[in-house]
Amino acid sequence: MYLFVLIKFLYSFIMRIILLIIFLILSFSITAYGWEKVPVPDYVDKKVKSPWNFFEDFEKQKEGKLKLKKLTINDKGAGLKPFKIKKDFDGNKYLEVTVKHGWNNDPYKKKGKETERAEFQTKQKRTLNKEIWIGFKTRLPKDFTHIDDRVLFFQFKNQHEPMKRSPLVGIRFYENGNVLDVGGDTGGNAGKSWNQEESDMHGIRAKYKKKDYNWFAFKTKNRGEKTTKNNFKLTPNTSFKITNKGEWSTYKIGVFNTKSENGFVKIFKDNKPIFNYEGITYDWKGNYTGSYIRIGIYRDSGKRIGVEYPDQSIHFDDFIVVSDKKTLDNNLD
Image: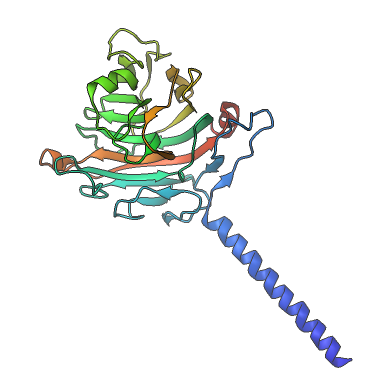
């Protein structure tokens, strides 16, 4: 009788310990990682839904170094050093991404072609004939220093092996931050470096220039045409407000990645449309391995011209990828 009672007590005690361990493991996972799955609404055609549906607001991350789970980094040697979780005075947590001279240079780049990067990304997925809606908030710190070179801070890229071409969608600064360049390549020979013929055939771009408190469109490039200064059909709004340093802005990007004419690339800044391309978005020759969505910093190194560019940090928050714009709007102000 006593033996039976003892066994029953030990069994109950062990089960409580097991349940406590499970609870602690789950609690740690929730605390360490803020990645959350976003349900796909019933009205979305499951055949074209995005392969990623998640929201990362960094609130459940601990201050300091970034912890990864469902997302990765484009690591060229610096590891997680460029990525830090920080907190504003109001308690909001965000991701600070920093690039420094010589950090994360692609080892396959030749001398004179050096780059520096710190990019946070989705895991690679196949996206052909899929509709993807991406959103994030970004902020340039008040002490941010622009450079007279390319500084890319977002890209949706169709990856090939090898890959020597631009993303389908990139958002970049040029000319000491006085030019904002959006767009990329809809196709071409992935293993062949940039050339004018393929750029004319496949490139889609819009360039905005600063004037007073606004960005004004001054050049566009549609698929199948050369760059022009007077054809602005890709720019629904030929001007929009500049966001001051120290203030958050919101970007929303829609992509339908397809070989058919019903593809599109749409870009909104603070809910104002700034780019609207409709047509073929995937016309590549090469071994397609999947697609990435990347936020962070990717710049040409000052080593190319014998100078050392200053450190640059950009803040990011509320990184979300879903299957339709309504869901994106409902989750991102």
